[in-house]
Image (cartoon, rainbow, N blue to C red; front, top):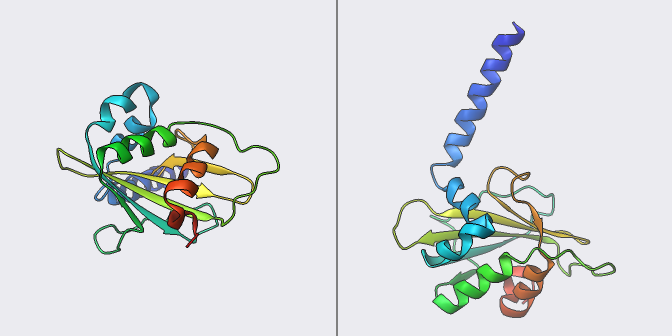
Length: 162
C-alpha cells in the first residue's frame, strides 16, 4: 500500500509539472540561470515581459502572459543585455537595507526562434531579494540585490513604485 501511494504521488507530481510546462520552458530558464550559457542565450532573447505582483508569501504566481498585460516590456537589445547582466549579478543584500515595497516580479522571456518562453520569479521581501527559475525554488536561487537596485533605477513600476 505504501508503495502504491508513493507511485500515485509521483504520477500526480509529473502531471502537475507537465501542466506548467505547457506555457513555460523550464529548461530554458535553467540554461539562462547558468552563467556559462547566459551570454550566448542573451542573443537569442527577443523580448522580456515583466509583471509586478503583490504576492509577499514567497510563492511564484503563475502569471498568464496570454491574457494579462505586462507591467514592463523590454525589447531593445541594449536593454535586454543590461537586464540580463543585472539579473546575473549574485550580490547579497547589504545589512540594514530594506526592500521598499515587498512583492514579486514575474519575468517571462521570449526567444527569437519562437517556442515556449523561459520564466523566472524575483521575490522582494523586506530583508532579502531572490530570483529563481519557475517551479523549483531550490534550483539556481540566488541573492540579487544588484538586480533590485537595477529595477529601482530603470523600471520602478516593477518594484511597486509609481
